[in-house]
Length: 248
Length: 248
DNA sequence: CCAAAAGTGTTAGACCTACACCCATGA
DNA sequence: TCATGGGTGTAGGTCTAACACTTTTGG
Image: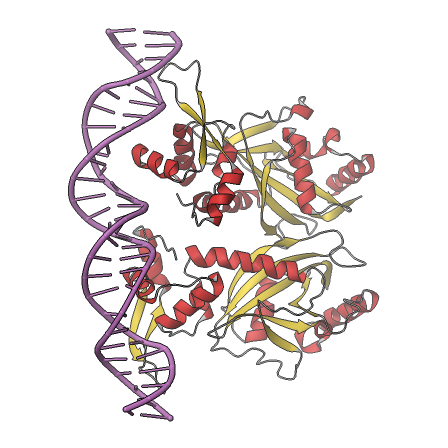
């Protein structure tokens, strides 16, 4: 059984090296059978959507989300959604906040708990649901028409990400496990919409002694190959204990 | 009508000059009639609590909160709660997050949206409900036994406050409108649990040019009277535009 | 005149900013 | 050998940390 008035919506962020993107689906996709573990839940959602059509605009996009099963809390359900879409169990996930305006969804009062997730581009989206077509990354600067208050939710998730990325080392989750300093700089420049001085950025990051030099380099690039670094959470924790204040 | 599975809980912080406190009430107080604008709502809550007693421990304390009326969203309802308890319309209020573990409340699944509020000590609590006795400030370092997951909610609200206070000028809301630099320093020392150097703290704060010197001084103090300053939001906004990064 | 808290300046080191050129690689 | 992006050092200014004594007020 699902809770008809409680849903989870995930703002899934991805970074392609130049743009910060959000993964959206077309709303009727909420009904894809494979997504529901429980056949009864699928039936209940189908009924619900028959009564309360999501949007009159068949072309509108929406955040990936669904109603919460009775025996799950929203954290668990967000994890389930993310693992279904990325085949990863340890995606970086944070609750943004609850959205619950009385009329945010027509016909029925639905509280949605929004999450944002950061996806490492190494992992392919939708390994488990390859058949699905209407699933697409959109640049945060050119969003399509979206259902309900999703545009608002995306905006607030983005603000939360911007806040978090400056004071906590979370940006790494948007990069491959091994990344170059240039990739990291581009990431910050894109998310924060600023330009950073390369020399100063490198000094700052390397001085924190937070990154591990993998002693590897890029291969097959048509220019000088860059060093690859890794982020290590244990080192970060140790440094925080010693008084490190991560700040970009 | 109220929504039986959606509530708001407020972590109301106050600062008495030396301690950071949270306002709690004793759980049966949820039933005080004056709190409900709508007689029908009061009846519904009474019924609900008869079926689902809040706690077997009559001495347990809880966050101030209540179920959300059908025609309100949680922001509005949190504002209502705060204005009822402080007779102020513009209390500083932030959503912490939604708590919705399946078993956080016995008998019934209730999602609660937690807020934290910062109360200026100039304003007296409970002007509108002077009769109430079981309402008390507790030092955050010595909380009493509390119902449900409220201890968890308080902890997360506190973490959010600590985070916010370092990077945004919100601490002022816990002080009288006109305050001394020593009061401000004590506030930061208490909230962040650190010691700050007086000379350096003063230089830092005054260099931001964020505070307005009221040209007034304390009166009736048994020592040299301190200057009184005011925080001005418009000045802050202007400085942010010019690139100010508020950081303690 | 005493007790209590307000208020203040300097120095050394760390960190930040601005800025331009050579290096390594594959095509 | 060319195009592309990787990688580096320095100097001047600003911010931070550490530190102790005098001033003002009321009782």
